[in-house]
Amino acid sequence: MGEPFVAEGCGNGGLCKNKRWRRLLQCLLAGMIYLALAAALSLPDLLHAGHGAVIGRANRDTTAFLWYLAWWPYAISHHINPFYIHAVWQPTGVNAAWITSIPALAIVLWPITKLWGATVALNTTLLLSPALSAWAAYGMNLEICDAFWPSLFGGWLFGFSVYEITQMQYDLNLAVLFMLPAGVWLFVRRLRGRMGRITFVAAFAMLWCFEFGVFTEAFAISVLFGGLILLMVLTMARGDVDFPALWRTAAESVLSLVVAVAVLTPLFLLPLVQGYTRGVIWSRSINSVDLASLIMPSQYVWFGAGWARHLWQQFPATGAIPSQVGYLGVPLILLLGIYFRKSFSSRTGLLLLIIISTAILLSLGPRLKVLGYSIWCSLPWFYVLHLPLMDKALPFRVFSYATLAASAASALWLAGTDPLRRKWVLSSMVILTLFPNIPAGIGTGRYANPPFFRQGYCRHYLRPNETVLILPFVSHLPVMLWQEENGFRFSMVNGFTGWIPVNFKWPRYISACLALRSAPPSDYGPQLMQFLHAHHVGAVILTSHPGPISEAAIAPLHARPIHIGGVWLYRVPHPSRSRPADHDALSTTASPDRR
Image 1 (cartoon, one colour):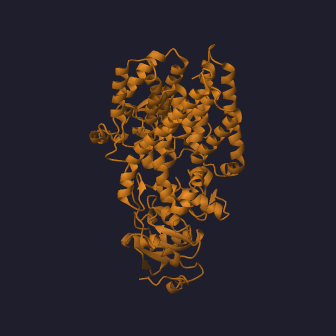
Image 2 (cartoon, rainbow, N blue to C red):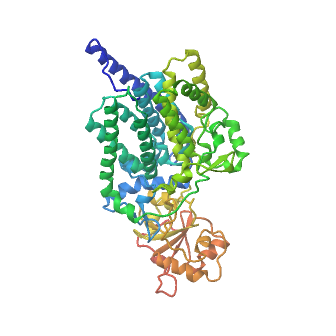
Image 3 (cartoon, rainbow, N blue to C red):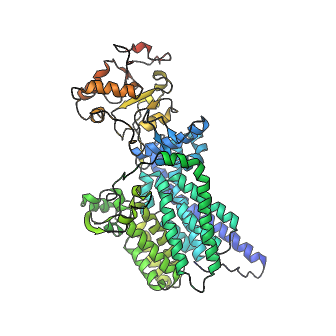
């Protein structure tokens, strides 16, 4: 990895040209193989589910990603500052710089979103993400080991890892992983003189900017982890290494980061300063890898999928998905053991061993967890969380670096001098235990969407930019999707942006009552009206059939509902009026379908 590139002797220009064409064809073949595998995982379920379905789980995070994909193009095209979002959490709003608002993906996918909608844009990204990650890892491995089949195997190992497949079902921002192997690929090409200085710095800076625009936490982890790896590379350099080339490439890598920060600062500095939320948001104990998951099969691989889910259910504390993303399997661990035993004395082997060990150790979180049982043992993450901006980072996300290093180590071992039979047997076992569960697929989900929103009745019954409260007030209700599909015509008190903004004020009892979980207390009425008027709510929309609790929650409005498109619409009386507003004056463009 550290040796300087030496120009290959061709004998004549034709041989070099033939080799370049062969590499290009192999690269295209690898991309087609990865794309076919990704399509086999996602496309059948998606085509069967039909229009409106999304790849993976139709959870609240996915509704937020759909909303963000549409928000950035909408805000930019309407000359609205996209960082200060007031379409949700009215009137407080939320700062887009401190939530996972994926501006980079939204801007890149703008043409798809404009032509076919945010759902198609999201599905396209999830369909391509494992193929792109595998393809980038293939390029990285080809640069390191210069062998097609080992590079193809290593690319598959990273792009279709359990970590990647799991994130495809839950988090769009974590499923886009191609930046990691692409960064290593650029570094090695520049180290070996196959890329010019300006091209390298510009490409690396663009990669930094894109990663920041996909997920700021991933950017922060890349800076810290990448800096640690760079220091290790410089420290481990020996006399047979072209140290000037290594130092030059390291310095230019830092320069690319400086360029990226210079580009991002004018856009993100003020929103980042103003929107910072102190303290921990998500539990690091739950969102860490269980040590047993390294060898216990995952439900997302073909081998053992039938009993893996049942096995994990025996340990309820490990039921959280982050606990299970660390699956490597016994054959892969054996393969890595054989490689490191033979290559431990080499700087490349030692470096990869340190990277894998460090990534796995960090992914375990602040406390060791085995089969759901926490062992009172402070791990390195306990100290990492005290670093700037790392108090919100989640440990399991570091595991992607372990899979990347395992990909490179596996490719190097297959390209080595071990007996061919051993390579075939061991690599086949790795494929058997890690091959994705294609028969089960990634799966698809679909959101409840009342005709009031789906068929656009809300355009007739709500005034432009009117603020509404949608009940029940719960985070899993796809209110973000309903607003996005109607072109942000109305604003909401509701929203799901990861967490409730710290300056969003809740009167006493309001939260539980509006979630329709309990009957309101005696002093609920004045507090509800105060809340609605303070948040400029013009209408309340009930999405479930009125029952005793919901009727009691809405009773202070003293309003007669309009039943239209599967919802019940209540007008909020003006505070200066002593009796409810006339429902017939609700909108000058009321639909004749009102019933």
